Length: 202
Image (cartoon, rainbow, N blue to C red; front, side, top):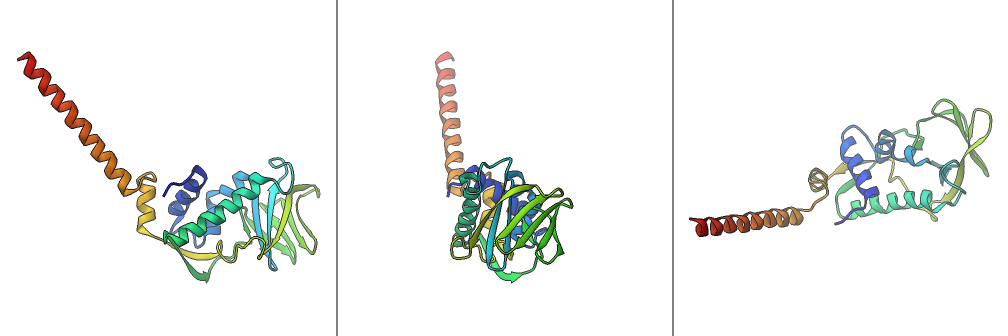
């Protein structure tokens, strides 16, 4: 299977933090993949709210930001179907936001990174700085519109096949075998050429 650079980055993070992270949410938070992209995800009262940083994205429905999240969800689905990762239906983490460190200040208000605030009041989901300026565009979806379920918050197990794939720089066994065979073929051709040349000279 061929993975693009975004997918490889996430898969590598899964392998790096396997055993150190209880969930894929924790993998994303430890690796800072979403933070670098200016994305935060909050699942709250049946809503999936994706926050996109305003200085990186022109508007709230920016294709690059939302596309990245959809690509991650699609990749997780593929990894599960191929049995590269197995989701264990047991939620063990208490991560409030995927993509940043957050804690509750009071009901419906979270503190993010100690100096920013996320409000989750009805029809007023927002991510603000300490002066009340909006830092992120909020994009709100129902579970039917953008299904996430507990994908980010469940315990997971990684297959040996996926570990080997990352260890071999995302080359499959067939590719590795082909490259070895190709290398041996070239060595044989070079050796035969040298023997032929030496036979002519001597």
